[in-house]
Length: 113
Length: 113
Image (cartoon, rainbow over all chains, first blue to last red; front, top):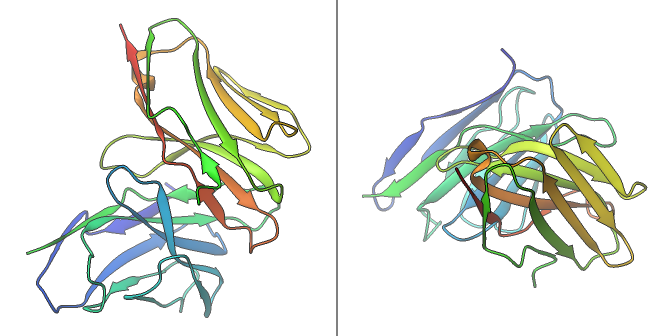
């Protein structure tokens, strides 16, 4: 079954700790994205990658880091520099054709202990 | 500065009737528009899209209309079903900015039996 898998579904972080959110896709998509959603807000872009070994900052990249070593995987690290990390994190991917929608995983909810 | 606006935070409709969700945008560089449906604690699910060269796209019960002169698009759901109850997001792609998606804040649709 093709799709995007995010893990874990729920994650708890202590103050000062880095955590990594996993995102894997088997859709053979070139582009992958990380978004953050806060209550009552739309989706805000953190980072995106259009090809392996390349990624760009989105609108709210501060306090986050990513890597894109494999086409299938785009992990997001929430660092201790992110002062307000509690949110719902969504990973998406899209194909390379002209008009292709982004497809999403089921998200990871990150909370601070 | 909200480039994609969904001015109705919520909408309530009777089962079997038409649901009309609206979206306004400000940037004439947007070339591709998408509607997504989202349930709580899940990722958005792609519903339907339209490119800027068209004014209507239909897929089953869902139709999207685009009025470029008014910078307005709408999603029609006919007939509405209780399972359609969810938050609906409008998104627009900026052709001139790495094709990033810009998201509205969503409209919560309740379809009453």
